[in-house]
Structure formats: C-alpha cells, structure tokens
Length: 451
Image 1: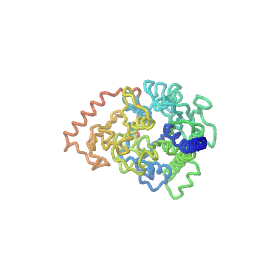
Image 2 (image 1 turned 60 degrees about the horizontal axis):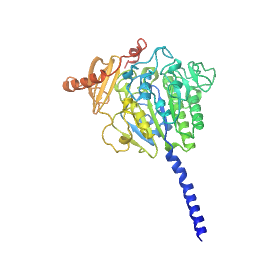
Image 3 (image 1 turned 120 degrees about the horizontal axis):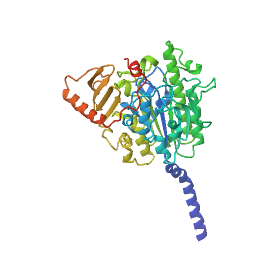
Image 4 (image 1 turned 30 degrees about the vertical axis):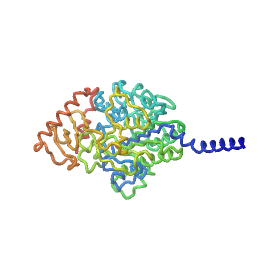
C-alpha cells in the first residue's frame, strides 16, 4: 500500500506540475516590447481619434484593448529629434539633436551622438533580441546605423525616401552597406510587415524588442493599386492616396499583432503606437484638428499626436487617460515592464507610466513638459502653455489648454504673472540644454511652418 500511495503521490505531482508549467514558463519570460511609429500623422487621423473617413481597425484595436492618451506629446515637432528622444528617453536638446541633418541620409556629422545609449542598448543588456525595421533617420554613416546602436538587425531606409524602390536602404542580413532597392514590386510598408513577421517567428523563443518606424505617412504620397482601390469614393487624388497609405499601414500593424497571437505572446507583449509629430497638412493632407499648428511648430498641432498602448491583462482595456504624457516615457515604462531598474545616472527625462495607468498613482506623471526647436519653444505646466511659434511670431503667447485646446485665446495680457512664472521655469530648463550640433536644412522650418 505504501508503494501504491507513493506512486499515486508522485503521479499527482507530475500531473499538477505539467498543468502549471506553461503558466510558470510564461511568467518567467520577460515581456516583449513592440513600438510602432507612424510618420507625419496628425492628431485628427485614425479611427481611435474619431476619423471615420479612413478605417484603421488594427491600429484602433490597440487603443480598444489598452489605453488611449488624449494628451500624448512628442518632444520634437520633427522627424529625427522625436526619434532621438524616443530611443534615449531624454530630451534630445540635452545632447544637441535639435534638428534633422541635411540631405537624404544626413551629413557626415549627423547622427544620434555616441554619448547616448539607446533603447536597444538597454534591452540588449537584458538579453533581448532587438531589431529596427523601417525609417531610421538617426544618422547615415556606418557608425550611426542601427547595427552599431544596439540593434541586432536592421531592415529599412536610412532616412526619408520613396515608398517604391527606396534608394538609401539597408538589409543587415545581407550587408551593412547602404544601397538602392531594385525590386520593381517593393513597397516599404508591405515589406516592413513581411520582415517583422519573419523576424518575430525567428525570435519567438526569447524576449524581443521590435522597433517599427514606418515612413508612412511622410511624403511623397505613394500607394499601390490594392490600397487605392479601397477608397473609390474619395475624389481628391492626394487624399485618396493618403487614405490608401494609411490602410496599408493598418494592414501591416494587423499582421504583426496577428503574429503575436499566433505564437501565444499577445498577452506577454507591451505594444506602443504613436506618431512622430503633427501632420504637414499642405504637404500630405494629414489633419491635426481640433488643434492649431502643423509639423515643425511648437503649437499643439505640431507636438500633440495620436498615442496609445496595449498590454493585455496588465493594463486596463478601453481606458482613456487624460493627463499629459510624452514619448520620452516609453523607455522607462518598457524597462519597468521588463522588471529592470532605471539607473539615476542615465538621467532619463521620461517617467514610468505603469502605476499611473493602473491607477496605483493618481497624480500626474509630469509637472511640466518642454520644447525647443530653434527660435520656437514652449512649456506646458499644468493646463497652462506658454509658446513661441513661427505662426504667431517670436513673442510668446499664453493659453489655458483646459478651456482652449485650439490655442485661440491669448491670455498674456490678462495673466502677466503666469507668463513670467512659466518663462522662468522654461529658462531654467533651457540653460541645461546643449547647443544644436548641426543646423537644419536651409528654410526647412519656415517652409513647413505655414498654417
């Protein structure tokens, strides 16, 4: 009987262990991190932002299954500065990365400074597989490319490019060399989805960081017939092409999300989606309403963007978060999700959002947010915003965003004390920033700052 009881005891233990092991194994694996970044898409686009003209069900699903930020900001109203802030978790002006560099790949001195550690560096140190797929725009010379900045693999363009047959392309599986794409059927958005799904399959057995910065919706406006055919009722040719590009990006996001489900990693993946700056309305038709201002301005239309995050089972689903956050928060939040501690010596400007999103902390993540883009600058402190933009001239204007999201009513005359207070706080922050390491393309800010 003793032998029988022993056999039964160990048999029961084996059955329980077998049943519990998958859960323990899943818990032991650190979460994957996926960062989707769209390019030049204004606040008034996407279904989750209220746009009913262009269906984006896959992108919308991130907000539906997670958290939508009504006041999600970026630290720069321009492509490269925002990316520099994202990957470092620091205001890019702290290390002089204030503007884009010159030319399609940037000049020889243009690139994310080597003094800065990237998100990929941080996660690679934790044992993550890392990949960048899409538009890099943080330096074209070999020492600035993703393969030297913590990413195991890079598949994409060095900077802005055409969607068909891009000329400054890298596929690090084949070579680190920058080369033109010769394939007549190559379309960046579709190709990036193909590579992302393939890469996830190859790295499904370990935690991974997937950074997927689309070049959609940056100009030139280009789309395949497949996507154009989805919008026969849009008569304006430019807007129809914009819609087709948006639909292609939504399909690409959907394919990545489907792959996460296929490998049973959907609930073990923190997924971010946002745009790098507001839309350049005249160039691409991208809508920023109800905000005022456009890309390359420090008005709300230049720096407040569509922004959402999903982590099923860990973050609430369908939540709308009303307090201001910024893309600098993505790095410390993702590190916290991975169970990693942030070293104070890194001097990150971002905040771990997890306790705020789960309700453990009811305070605001940020007391103040700051911007500097050449002669344009801004500070947001509480609901007050003091901003100097090219659209309004060099003199700063004061707005209360709680009552005036469109920055229409200037309160400088009636609130001189508030103007003085905010300017003093911004001056203190500004004194900590580094001078720009390079100047923008001649006239670039002026051309894009038209209302």
